[in-house]
View 1: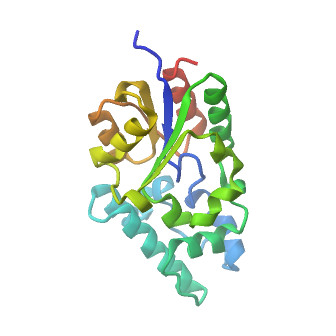
View 2: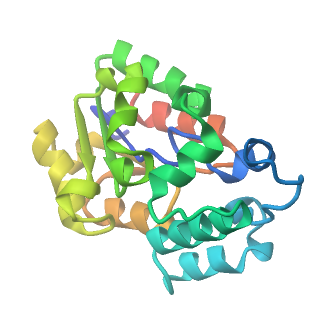
View 3: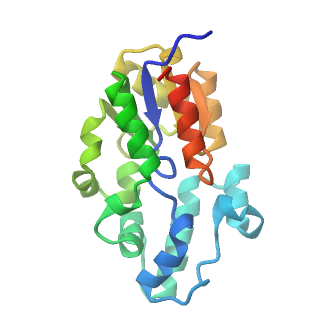
Length: 217
């Protein structure tokens, strides 16, 4: 039986935070749009979201996807959103805590109480949400390390991105359980030797249970 993991390494968007897709009806209400206007649903209805399919195939990047959706949605309300924080703040308001998955908070608490290290590895944490939002999420203080490609400029699945986490925690790849909702990022983590959980945004509880099990808790 493999040794239990020593650290839980999480992506942020989709894994810790609910996806925009899951809150589309609330998003529309916040913008004063009729229900059903925002009909792009990403992984929840991939067959109806051609842009999502392009992103999954590698034809465009995840950033390309969200910048396009931000511009499209801004046009619907007569606003120009060239920056992603403006998009997310308009559809989600000033309290990001409301969009945090309760399953994530439980898993973070369990891992911390068990003495496991905690890290976030994100491609666009502050780029998407804005530098000031972290102060509104007190649970982030529980993390030993946050690596954000907004500043490192090295995006997953580049092996160097995972290396920042390993160096920062002072752990081997085999000590870490990495959780992400994007297949390419999961493959990148596996390639460097991390334990992996491909997060299913439609079944968050099951994905976190799998991660906790690998941690030996």
